[in-house]
Image (tube, rainbow, N blue to C red; front, side, top):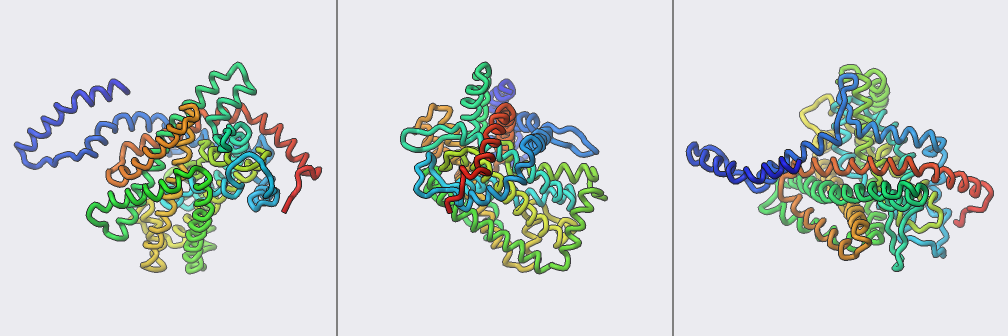
Length: 511
């Protein structure tokens, strides 16, 4: 890979000279912009990295990325190993979110409440994928992809349960009261404590995870989200001179006001932003659904039939299954370990409580919001009408009830993108802090650089940079899940103890 990059760098002046000479002779070759030059230089690396992590094998005539199988397999294993904790612990998780077991006078370590930890994590997963990605899944896999998407979301609940429990269990409590947690810490501290002979292996996994989290956050959390947010605003307004630069600056400043304050401020903002933007989107979707209420039975029929027959869909049932599983895995991030970073900051002395709270994250992201998007597209028949893809397909579905809806959707997309940006700033900063021995200089230095890259993301085509960022995010799932498999017996032991104390009344409601 380095040899390829060096060759590109060494040959670049010659390539440029040939291009200029050819343009002078023919007068028809357009001059490459700086962004295009960067993209051309990075593209070979992007293709190599992305092709490796998203390596696919043909199944039933459809290409299946092995990384998706890695994530879905984890969901199956954790669901069975913990006795369907995604079902058994669902109600208890809701009671914890409502504060039923939280003593307001408690001096437990942590920075945010269960509710704010949840909204911070949800803000990192609820994004453009819930709008654009679902449309792609249905376009390729048909309505039946929705069924498999929901199933994968339910399995992902169990994965989040284990990750977030471990995040709290092995978090680092600093003298100033701030918290650092997530896979970096349970991979290093957890594996070292329970498997002393594997301590160096655990440290290596933690370093790989942290590096990928930093770089993935910059590309996918800052650059991509800001770029797509501006694209939606430009789409409905027509844009203006230097609009991308000004939008990027405002976006970065607003983001900076939130992220500089750490998880406490992020939690405060997301506690208001996430319920509001989710409610706004769900209400809009329900408006479309009730406007076409007569089509709802047929839509559910198409989803069930498509899940088990998928006639006319590439790959048939397997094609629908793969697209549904892929979209769920890409949307709720169960298995990547990212959410455990936010959940680790919760105020609690019982690590299991945050595992129960985390069950609700994939449920909100995939089972509720992604399903709403799917229903809107299916009942308006936009997947059949065609002529659009991604977010535009969803926008067209909303537009069937009024010309004003694309504007409302643009606002929602902006909120989704912004919430993802501020949460991934925290994830990347915590990963950077881990690598530099909890240095505050590194922590705030990363945040500043992250915000600068959000501006850059608005002003240039991303292409290869985003491909690398996506790959890096999913590389996180490899070291993370290896560590989680090693540590799941520890979680099982604590879970048995927790259930026993809950039943005996030792753990009881305070509100």
